[in-house]
Length: 503
Image (cartoon, rainbow, N blue to C red; front, side):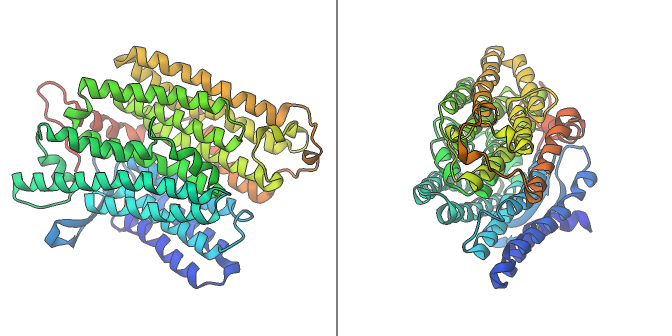
């Protein structure tokens, strides 16, 4: 019973909570949102134990939705999407709790949008119908637009509109490609269906048209990642968004782009994605992103913008891992996706907590904070080291696997990417020193309060995961390995073997 209903419950429950919020008194809004998000997390937790480390989809449910158009309500998870769902349900209650002091106006609307966003994010990761996937992709876009545009910083409207235009244009191209793909498959099979399994099993070779269709999917997902040079919306959106918006944007929404490549763009068009020219171009863009994101982060005076540019660098490792196409690199890419959500999410929470105290994010406004807020300084240090990729933290596991796996197929690219780890130390460690270890020479910082119990409740679960994955990543790797292996075999079958088909 759980297996049949769990994914539908994860999709429906946040919407139920959002409706309840809108009719509840304003003063109850944040507490009801926290309760609803904790229930959502509780529903998802058993997935960790019930999920079997095997290739293929699990917890599937397929029900006709619009039969005349070949559209089904079809959901399921595998070792790739499982962790994205769990990361989503894990970060949302922390985001709600982290917004208790930050959000003081229109609280019902804010938390209702946050819950609707949760349904959209989960829906993207569990959809096995292309129409349902597109609907969830757009559902996720609208709440984030309002979260940035209404509760963001001074330039919130500019950032929200820029985010919306970039993402919406990419998604429109993807919609055209989806419709074309379904039509072409229907011409071959006589069956008009948006089913992921049906499309991928019958797609065959599309000739020159495949390059155009892949290009449409590529743009939609590259903008979302964001890959260089499609990244320019990201710093504005991150800096202007409220803390919860920044956490979910970095922790979940960016991963929808890399997930899209793993689930759709590469499996649908392997002959294009793995074409030597395309593959070389994408790996080159990933390397540019790794180095460019780090170098630009080095010169940022705003701590939040520094973290935003670091995301461009981290997601470059994911793209390199996917296109290196070895088991280690693909598993490493998945681990970087998880770890970036944890470490960068924690960094955004910490910067938000600083902003609540001093109403500035400028690095030069701080200094010597370790003397007045030692607990904050200790957690900021640990999280920063995990973002750099220090051994025994989560960041090391993913980046190490990407580099080792990539070295087998693209040794030059892996060597260049290794310098990205050095660049990460060059932008985070000086910022860390200037914020917490320099002299305490500004009177405004001398009376700052250390972390409250509520703030510790937000940060300690993230710290626990950072240490857990860094010390013992085996449970994660074991669950994702069969799906990662199947992904590789499906796009690059061994000689004489039939490509595995995800169903």
